[in-house]
Image (cartoon, rainbow, N blue to C red; front, side):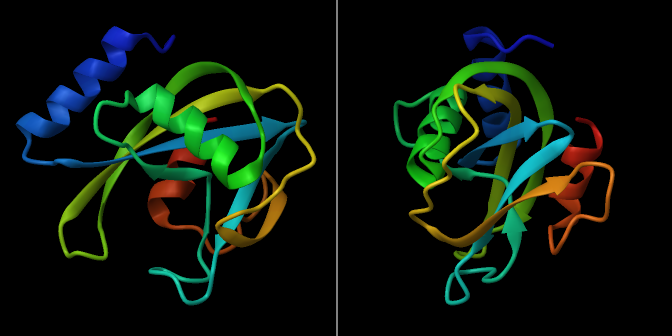
Length: 145
């Protein structure tokens, strides 16, 4: 499914209609059968967990724009295209409310170097292997890549 602004807008409206107002946009970056994972700092909420680059959607920002911005901010990689929507999952955030994470398959201009600003490690994990320390939500999203 190609990602259009209409699709992204309808996804956000659907979540809001369901009472979810906290959104995270995530980018699944792949290269040669591997996916880029980043590890949360030990002292962060859910510290030590491996995840895909993601972050809060800022006011006035689209889901797609947030996925691109967060990828650049967290990894130093520039998204050249947002290729498809991979689904969403909900989780309890640090405030005890529900956040919906929208996940997008992206292509980056170059796969390196990865420059971390908010995480303590990164790795390129095999999509077909056992993924290290990721949530069930992330595991399900990556199974669809």
